[in-house]
Each structure stands twice: as structure tokens, then as C-alpha cells.
Image (tube, rainbow, N blue to C red; front, side, top):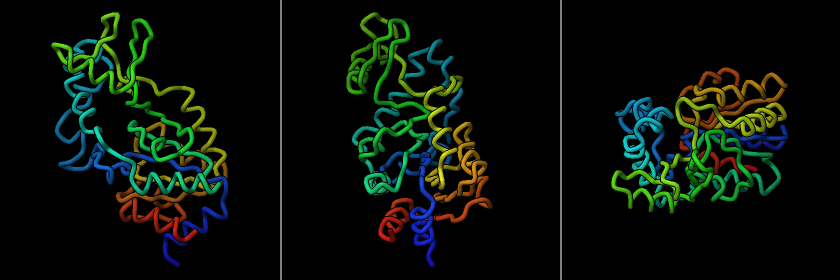
Length: 247
């Protein structure tokens, strides 16, 4: 039995199934991950110097010079076959929910209902001074029209993207939902994640402690490899489309 068929069998027999996705699921859409040598986002820059909440507070121009590049990086990117495969599993009633570490919004665009975005989303930016928020397109326009390329609220304060920066706590409601979903899972399907960044990396352990099972679809090693029932290590789109075809 192939690994794809084995995973399809687990999906059929171990409901409810919950997916946890990391940066690797969006790489086929042209969005680099964070730690891959030479191509990762943090390969040539120290995130603590550009993507920390203190940098945003102290030097918004420096912060936005980096985040403006991220906006450009996400411009025009579309969901790929892996995103659509998860949406199709949900449509068929085989997937109870998606928890994602990604901020790109591609799960929702692929049709997943209410993905839990534990690191927030780049779709909006907020003013912490007055509480207004702006969609991505308007945030980019405001950045382009500012002399320092800092998107500003109508009140004049610098906007902050609605993503979790280094030095910030993850949103409590999203984490609580994610933990409850993980603990209820008969099968946790971890996709495109090294499972090294906490607290999201602890979610598979929540599933295992509650008696559920674990399957991995990721190219690199993870701390959970020995505990997984099955691991698919090929291209994430090919692997998930093969699983879908086997169902």
C-alpha cells in the first residue's frame, strides 16, 4: 500500500480529521518559507531587527521597509492544489477544520471555511491608537503615498499589520480554538510545517495525548516523525492530490 493510500485510509477511519499547516503548503504558490537555506525569508535578515513589535514602535519606517517587501511578495499569489485539496476534503465532510501558521489568507481563498489563523493575517492592518483598520489594498496605497513609506491611519498614527510579530502573544481566542480542535481530532494532518515553532508545534501532542493519531506531509524532518502513523515527504501538492484521488 502506498503512503498516499495509507493516509487516505486513515482519513476515512479516524474522524474527525484536523489539518495544521505551515509555510511549506504555500511554497508552491511562490511564497518562500522562513528557514530554507538561501531562499528562506530569515536567511539574510535577522527577524528581531525588522519584524519585532519593538521595531514597529520605535522605527516604523524600518519596520515597513521590510513588510512592504512582504506585501510585494504576496502580490498576485494564488492558492495551489494543496490548498484546494484541503478545501475539497472539507466539502466532502472529511475535514473538521484547518489551523494555519500562515498569514497569507490562501486557505480562505481556496474555499476553506473559517480557517484558524494563529499568527493572524496580512489581509488587514490596524491603528493601535484609535482602533480603525484597513484592508490590504488600502494599506499598500497609504504606504506608497507616505514620504517614509509608512502606511498611516487618518489619525496620523502608523498602522500595524494584523499579524503576530516577534515579541507579541498569539491571539488567545485563536489558540484556544486551535487547542480544542487538536484535542478533539481523531487524526491530526500536519502539512508543510517543521513543527518547531511553539505554541502551534505543540498541537500534534495535544492530539496524541487525547488518543488521536498523527500524519505528516512535509519534506523535512520534524520532532514528531517517530510518532506519526505515516509521513509523505514529496511535493505537497502531488502528495495531497494523490491522497484525494485515493479517497
